[in-house]
Length: 317
Image 1: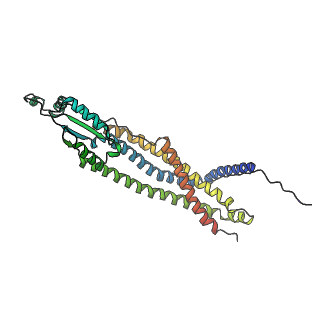
Image 2: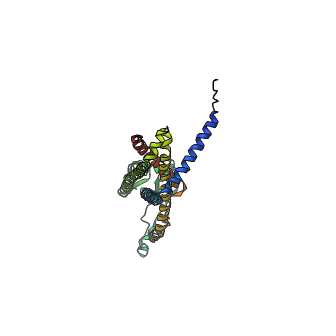
């Protein structure tokens, strides 16, 4: 009599496969506590290794906030003719606002300029002896974000100098170039350090799983003898690597927030010396979740290479 085998529906097979993956994932999490001291030490090293580039990321993010607040460093001051009528100045202001390279234009009249100079110069009594106001009207132009680079601001300055009524345009290109150079150096340095530290995470996870595989060599040989597939043998180790990455990422997130809170008072005190209301920005939920996902991805990559390299060499004798 022929035996009739009923093929299970596709949906049922997918559900069984998902249940099996969930079971093995939680079983591999439990395996971490078979050697709690070694697992905790590995997680601590992973947390610190991920926290360092995370702290550098927070540093860069705050530096970019400061850079954005210093956008007046690319401000262009247009000194106009003293005899230019008020309406002509307002028309020029509206015309410059139509430039796609311009974000905003502020008009400073001659009287306002003299009043401001009197307040900040300390020569108020001396100014009273002047027969007339020597200061010209000024238009302060803030370039659009895409034109705040030294090259873009210089090009915009050339166009503005050609406007009727403009006697001179002034832009501190040297300071702007230095600011951009500092930010580029900071970005490149942080990127290089982050690559090195993330490479260390790969090596730590890979070496830890190599030791786990060697400790379970006899069990792996038995599984191969009874016909277990490679995927079945590899899966627990892959999930272990993912758990190392996830927990290490969570620990790194916590360490980064601790560093932000610890530094907040000093930063606030320093900002007060410059009459600034700057507040330190932390990781945030999105960055924190991205850090955990990055840790999981690094753990998966490291475990995949370690598992395929070492389990393949284990054959039952």
